[in-house]
Length: 447
Image (tube, rainbow, N blue to C red; front, side, top):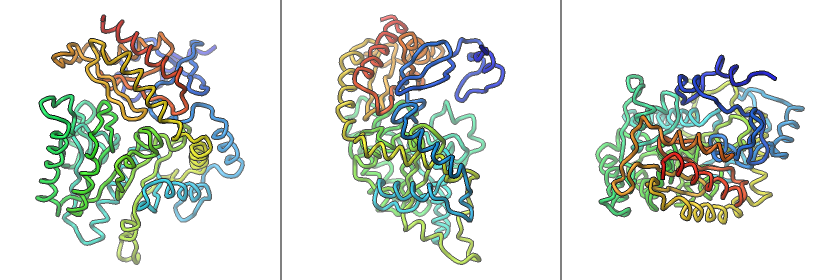
């Protein structure tokens, strides 16, 4: 048997990983999956508590998606969309238009969440240029925002740990505060929401002629530690955008495809963005695929004679890949056939009850944030003082490494432990994840 652990250390540079630590550690190597479980080369089975980084929807080795990819292989693996069409990409686009807000009628494909955001940025910028509003170049995002890792998407990010090193490469953006009650305990949720909305309103009224778009992760800021926005915040931002001729971009890369309990998070407040970014769960966790949805109003601003140079000069070699589109169509079929969203609400409530019963009262759990199946458990050294652990202790990392002893895989965002399982998970498996997390917190935090 080959020594996969050492081969990995010899050849792989892992994302978001301090490789010095990796090279000095015993690491988990996954070789297969089944349902909500992953099987490692050490012979052990682990519950996939983070959906393989938030992408897996219906479980691993889902027969219908397997078969869709195999059937498509027998027809066509890939054909360019530059100057040609391809059947699976057309069928998927029709399905996406059907399930997204009704103002979104065109689909531009790419291959990751970051590229979906890059596409949205470039479209928004060029839209205003094509309309003759050359001054509208600025973008607005939220404090603690995360929209991907390409230079354009990083320019919209506001998490210093990830983004500060690249500041010399980035373009200027405006940042508005995030309504996060845990870090602003002196204000009520309503006051905090209004303060943040008033901040954006002031900027929009003063600089609306310069602002191309506001981009937001609707309802939940994932990489910031699962920060859940108060009800009405997203709708309030939309109204301010409309009043000041600012485009609204909803980054649904993490929140889309059922993660918050609805197909898309913007549905919670009946928000209709001008552009929407999709990726992660679109193929059920099988293949890289992304889409940027736009309104006809935006699309039509790019129509013209060749010499007007209104064409959107952007594309990817694997745009609209047929295998990925076939997987995504099968993924959407499962949503319909198995009534996934209808069956999700009781599971969400069960998860919330488990979190409240087992974790909320632990001395070192400062906050539990949940929106649908997106959950963050913030660990603190002192709960009453809201005192964080020293960064060098890496408590979140230690808790998530220790939880593997109980057959569960989780990941931290700093000292926030993330639980985001596949939508196909059952209640007994949810209970297993929460129980394992409780044990690991108690052991590592020495409660």
